[in-house]
Every structure is written in C-alpha cells, then in structure tokens.
Image (cartoon, rainbow, N blue to C red; front, side, top):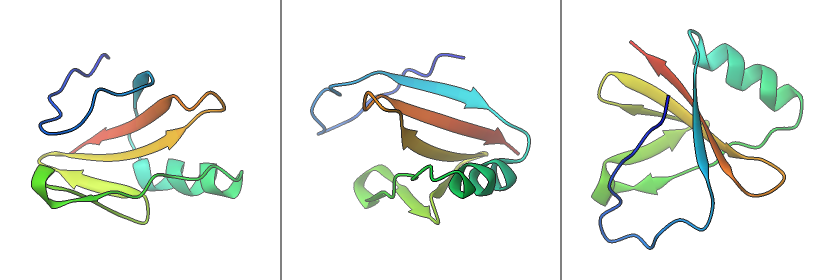
Length: 80
C-alpha cells in the first residue's frame, strides 16, 4: 500500500514513509516496544492527529509511526 496525503502548513518531509497493514495494531506495537522500538508521539490538533501510547485513531483507522535506522518513517495501519 502506498499512502499519499496532504500536509497543510507542514514542510516537505526529508525522508520516506512506508505503510504496513496489520490486523492487531496494539499487539504489534507492544511486541515491537518490547524489542526497543520507539514510537512517535504526535499532538497536531490542526491536523486532527494525536497519539496515545504511540497510536492515533483517525476516522476508521488506527495508526502508529516509528523510524528506522535511516530516519525513514514506517507506519503501521489497522482498519476497523
């Protein structure tokens, strides 16, 4: 899956983003955190985006973001 989205008022990203689908986001986030993966925390009311424990609820999706060793953003996505 390739996600293309607008970022109103935000500078262009300096990295690549890749999105991966999962059926149980909370379980996957917990597993990756146990392996020292650090999830991004966002609070951007202008975009309707706020994470709680690394997970954001956006319409009919839940998402979590983390960076790889090259600072690329990886997204985990679960659809309701």
